[in-house]
Structures are given as C-alpha cells and as structure tokens.
Image (tube, rainbow, N blue to C red; front, side, top):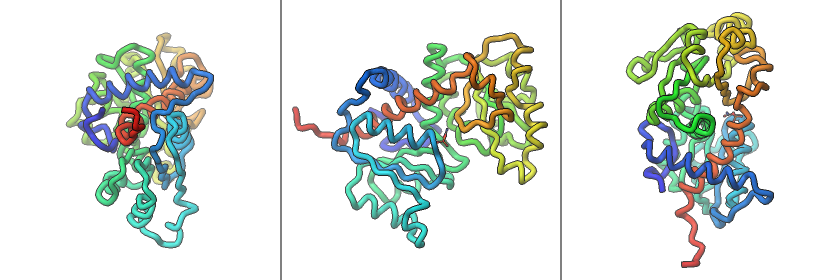
Length: 311
Ligand code: CP
C-alpha cells in the first residue's frame, strides 16, 4: 500500500511508492494483453471523474482503467453541470460525495485545486492535472515507459524540451525522475525556464543539439499555442528551427535516442510527424502504459476500500 491517502503530486513522493506503482503497473499491463481485459479488483468501489478542463488521453485512460478494474464510474463534465448556474466548486464536490463515492479523479485549470478539495471531502483524490502545477499520473506513466525501454531509471539521462515554466508534465517528471535517480537537463526558450530549477538537481542547456548528444531519451513538450499570442514564444517556424525535434536534426546526430511526448502533439512544430511515427518514438507505448499505470494507482489507493467478505 502507498504511504499517502491521495495522489496530488510527486514533490516529496517516496521513491519506494513510485517503484511500487511501476511494478504493479507492469502486472496490470499483462491484464491488458489478455482477451478479456478485466479483473474484479475494485468491484464495489465508486469513482467520479471530475474534469473541469479538456482531456482526451487522461480522461479515457482513467475511465478504461476503472472499467478494467470493475469499479463503478461516473463522468462529470463542468461544461454541462450546475456550475454553469453558479454553483460553487465546494458545493459541487460535497453534493457528489453525498452520493457515497469513494474516489475522485480531478483535472482542473487552477494549480492546487485537488489539494483544496481534500479539505472538504473525505474521498481519495487523484490529481489528473492541475493547471501549470503537476500531472503526477503522466509522470508515472512516463517513468514506466522509460523503465520498460531501459530496464532502469537510476542514472538515465533525460532531456525535457520546451516550455518548462507552464508545463505540469515537466514539473511532475522532474520531481519523479530526480527521486528515482535519473539526471535531467531542460532545454527551451530561456524565458520559459523557471528560476526555481536552480535550487533543484536540474541543469539548463539552451542548445538542443548538446542535449541530444547527452541524453538517453527526450521528453518533448507541447507548445501551448495560447502562449504565442502573449509573446512568450516566437513564431512556430522559429521555434521549430531552434527547439523542434526535426528529422534533419536527429539524422545529423546519428544516435539512438528515445523520443517521448505526452500529447497532444503539434506535428511540424515541436516534433516532426515522421519522428513521432518512427520506431524511436514510444509515444503510443506511453498511452498504453497510461492505462496500466492508472490501474495500479487506483488499485493501490482504493483497493483497501473493498471488502469482498471472503475472509
Ligand atoms: N497527456 C495529457 O494529459 O493529455 P490530455 O490533455 O489529452 O489528457
């Protein structure tokens, strides 16, 4: 079992618990390869997916993970809820909990919203991405995918490329990977590299070519186009030329390097389509491992809620 009741982020998350989640996820990966991809582990557990922000991968992945574990699931979409009539976040959550639920998976645009929720409901809370803060389940699936590829995390050299300042994927990966003994270099426009990295075990290099030479794997972040309008990122053409994972750039390096991307991708901007579709990219493995990782997280956090009455 895990030390913490909730999964809110990977800052200060114990290495032992990250390893337990990854090991359990590999067991569930085996379930996903069976003709009948379902186990009764969370029968009787009710989980609400509370999404206040758009999602494709995380939402479907959590829902599939819950169904594969035989949990009862309910999906909540803010855009079609009574929030639109002015009901508060707190009232919404407390009303949902009054219907006897066990866990909430929440995505919210406000950093810290999942932690805030723990103050007024008793259910287990899992952070599915809170603004620019953390996306812990993405980092767990990324670490599982690296583990699958390299057989270890300790000593791996990982480059994280792009807008680090606004990326919850970057921050959770930095926390998780450094805890597990990996080395990290970040690379991106200098104005999008947060100052607090100086106090962490993370190096910055503005040269993508140098980071490619150094790294075992690159985690390529989505360029959030809304930031271009605010002048934080130059034109997409300029961004691609300086920080894009292009076919020409990788060919020049003549080295095996694993390419990751959390999705959604801007093909032709931060990554060329031909690279995303190549054998060196493990992007769809990440997606599959996302289901297994989320099964593991749900099982380890909510499994204690189940009493099958057979002992
Ligand atoms: N990687 C990720 O969080 O994707 P979605 O926004 O589609 O969930």
